[in-house]
Structures are given as C-alpha cells and as structure tokens.
Length: 331
Image 1 (cartoon, rainbow, N blue to C red):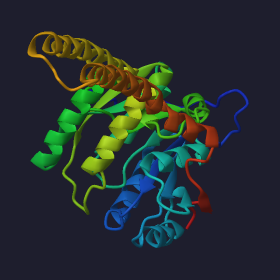
Image 2: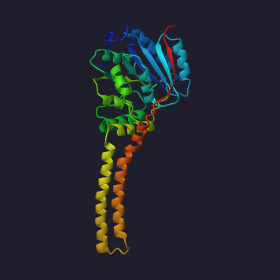
Image 3: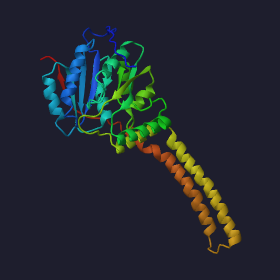
Image 4: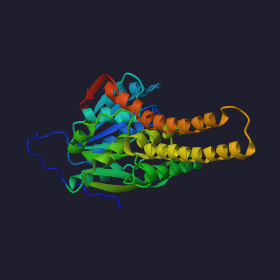
C-alpha cells in the first residue's frame, strides 16, 4: 500500500532553519523528449511537499540536447535545482552516485527521467522516511507496461539475481529508491569499482520499507537497458556479493579430477587388455587429464577476482564532473 500522508519535518539538531529537506536525483541520458513534462511534475511536487524540493539533474554524457534543454527549463523554473554535467557517459549508477554526493536534502530520492514511475511515488518515499521508522524506501514494481520481450527478459534476470546473488533483493528488482542522509553517507563511503549501487544499498542493511507501484508504458524514446548491460550488471553483482563463481569453478575442477580418474581407469584397462602399442600413450593421457583439470580449477579460482581487485586498487573515481550549475528557483 502506497504511503500518501505528508508528515512535517522538524529541524534536526545542528541543522539550519530553511535547510533543504527533500532532494531528488535524476540521471539524464537521451531524455530530451520527456524533460519538459518531468520538470513540470517536479515543480508541482515541490509546491506540495513540506520543506520544498531540490532537484539534482545529472547529464551523463548525453549525446542529444538534454543538457541544453534542461538549462533553459531550469533557468525559467520555480524549481530549486542543480545541473551536473559528466565529462562523458559513465553509466546510470555513476550518475546516481554523483547526484548523491551533491544533494543537500535530509531525504534523498532517485527517479528516472523517462516518466515510467507514477507522479505520487516520490511523495510516498518522503512520507515513509519522515515517519522516522525507516531509513530506506525501495520502489517495488507490482506491474509493468513494457514490451513482452523486455518484460520476459527482466523477469528471468531478476529471478536469477534474487535466487543466486542477493536473496534480500525484492522480487522484480529495484530501479528507484529513497534514503536518509545517513544512509547516503554510508553508501558513498563504499568505493567499489564494477559493483551494483542497488546491491550495495541492500548490503548496507538499515531499516527498509517497500513501496509498491505500477510501472507505466514508456512514452518517449527507447530504453538504454540492453541485454548486454543486464548481463554486465548481473556479473558485476555476482562477483561483488556472492561466492557462486568460486563454488562453481571448484565444482568444475573437482568434477574434472573425478572424470580424469575414470579416464585413467579406462586408459589403464585399455593398456592391460587391449594392448595399446603407442609408447608413452598411457602416462601422457593421465598427465594431460589430471593436470589439465587441476590447472583449470586453480586458474579459474584465482583469475575470477584478480581483475576486479586490480580495478579497485586503481582508486579511480566512478565519474568525472565537468560542470555544476545551480538554479535558485526564483523567477
């Protein structure tokens, strides 16, 4: 059941009167068509919310005119906002992380720019957090109006994810969420490369609440969430949050050793009774079978994580901010 009630947000100890209470982060990539309606929605929400609203738009190297259009829209808007430009496309999770780092609100939500989330979802997020009983609000889809191919692939993707990677993940996955400032700080302190931001949010724990919603049909553009990106996201999550690859490779290695022993028995029987005439054939086959499977298991066990460990050791930033513009929302 979606929470709708608005609870007044008292000033916290040490917080200035008039400080930003609510922030929303919007990653932007190829969203030029939907931006005017999105800004209008956020203006209406800002007028309704106790404590107002700060919008943080992160233009993630978008090749269209999204950035320029946003600048024009925000210059003539009553919405208090920040416009952050990435130097290139770093991905949606990197854009969300950038938004989290600059957002000023006590309660910080994340939403997409494609308008597929309902207008009341952000209000429900903030209402849940203001009760003081929850630290994280997760948007959980009850239904989705997507093409059947996309729905089918998404359903299988999240089924595998929840079964093998993170059982704590809500069924159907999470695309949008909100959290308190303390959770934001804890999340930004995790500097893992090639990981899942949502996975890290689930891993942190805290007091979570699920807010159900119905995902609308996409009215503008096309989704950039391709099958290739889904596969990359799945593998990043697998390597970051589960020991499944290690156990799988160990199973392959042990199975190879057992099969090698069976093969050794077969070769030995052939040598004893079939009269193998090739000199050195038996010991050569035994060496190849046993050492090959052992080497495979050892290399697989170590090599699966070497590259990711190396990536984390570089300590590169997840994204590079090229420009930050601020709009005070006063016409």
